[in-house]
Amino acid sequence: MGVEVGAQAARSRALAVLRIRSRALAVALLPAAVAVVLLVGGSTGHISGGSWPVTSWIVTVIAALVLLAAAGIALVVARARPAVSPTVPIAEASAPDLYRLVRDLADRLDVPPPSAIALTPDCDSWLEDRTHPAHGPPPPEHRDEIAGARGVGGGRPRRAPAAPVLVIGSPFLWWMRVGELRAVLAPVVAGTGPSAHPDIAAARRFVRGLDAAVAVTSEPARGPLARTVLAGVGWVTRLLLRSCRGHAAEMERGVAAAAAERAQAVDYGLRIVAQEQVGLAYAGWDRLLTRVALPAWRMGRWPARLDAGVVAALTELSRRDRLAEGFASRLGERPACDLLEEPGSVDEAASLLAARLFHGGPAEPGPDWAPVDWQEYPDEVVDRTWRTEAARLHRVLDALGVRHPTDPTQPDQGGPTLARVLDHLTAPATQATDDADLSVDRREAYGASGESGESGTGVSLNETEAGTGTEAGTGTEAEVEVEVEEEVGEDGEPVLGSERTAALAAGLSAELAREEAAAPAVASGPGGGAEQPGPDWSFWDDGMLPLFPLQPPRSGRELLADHVTAMVCCAAMDTAGAAPGLDWLDGPALLVDGVRAVDLGPRVLTLVEDGDPEPLRDWLRHLGVRPEKPVRLV
Image (tube, rainbow, N blue to C red; front, side, top):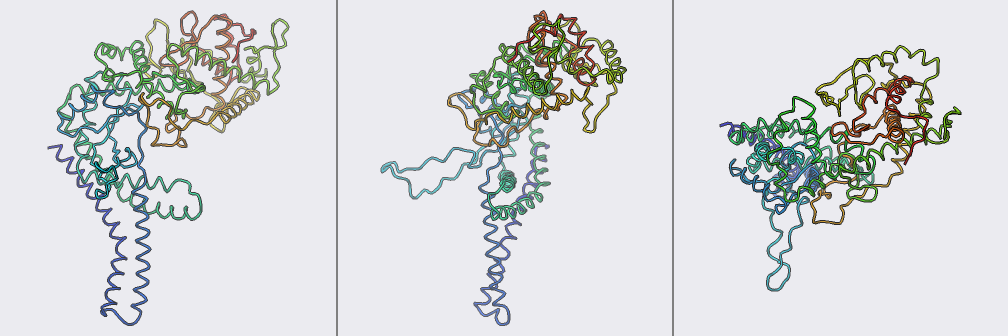
């Protein structure tokens, strides 16, 4: 009963959208109809004398202009290419078990199966209409079987109606089990039933065409004439789109309600459990991208097994967090990625697409854009990132004319040392006296909060106890917050320790901007091997990248804190025997005797914001780091 109610509501809203289309057509034809009446009446003598002949010609000209404008708008709407989500297409030969699972699910739901399957580097699944001629291969040429010539009587073949494409989030395949994936996909696949209705399909095509036409008119035009014409087309299409918006939204709600009601009969109990896995996979995927993948992308490396990394990250979460203990027990069941013939190549293609979407990286691997395995991540990404940032920090210090320490007891005074950074960032005595109370509060906060990781911020020390025997959260489950009042500038950023510190932060921002501007442009086309699955690059252009930036540009304070942290880590590796490491939930980590070093982030912020080096010096003395020794840079 619920299925019929939802479907009927969707059909009624689809008819409302089509009525708007019919009214727009009637408005375009109305001047032509009036002109025909006037011309016929004049030729038959029923309308004659006075100003009727002049009126007839004026109305005829107006009708011709209106028809010409309507034809132009219709042409733009018909030829505009609707937006398509960037995905990795999965051929049936490369995933026969996955196609079989989806078809069996469609049979159980009594709906048409999707026409194809594609993967997206996101934690979501949906149906996508790709029936537009621009989204498919060119139609085959019809030739006479005997003479081998082109057929002359057949004309252009009609495109057969095709079911929508099923787009599946790639993290689901690696984290979920086969039964959970089937339960999650049930309401999505059920949506192919209402989508097959002619009225709903026609309404969707009309709305998607209007949306694509608005995008076309929003592009920068070449000349004033084209800009004026496109402005008129854009005004009309936006007016129609606003008229359809409410009905289209209600139509989609009706389709979703009908699909959800139809899917109630398929694995309903398992769907409740699977929805919990959806939220967990989303949290792990977001953490992996922002903490682990983003540093690699900034270094010109892209992790080639992001989906496998989600499993490692969520397994680490279940180890640390008691709330997630039950999730690890599922790992003994068959994962959904076993439905793919070559899960490694699919994971690599999805990882490359994720780097393209979230960071704007090149479309193909190259010398400056190479894949990296998780085993090589500490050396290829963490170590190189720290040493590159430390080298940039010293280049800016050289440009500012900062001299090396003059203490005669410190050897190798001309090399890049941590002592040079500490001395430059240490606030003058007068300012240090003014900030003494705040520094004392921060040092007391360290003792109150216990051990903290490296990702703490100035006012909220949200850290994870990793590498210890303690039970802790991941920065979202078990957080220790210490509220410390800070002086904030006009731009909302905390005031830095001194004018020298602010100048150094500005210099780092300018140096990083110059490096990014000097970076070569990304490649716009796919690579050579077409046998391996890869993203469908042809449906979107490079000017839109990145489509979904993970984080806003770092402020000068954040850049300075990151570079000082990198310099400290380099000194620890070169003088105290530390090593770079990878934490699945927090990204790059400093390992001392195989255990992650903690409580570094808040101490670096104390130096940057307050100009107080004592907490950081205590930390360095505890680990045996020698700030006066030169470090190796990139």
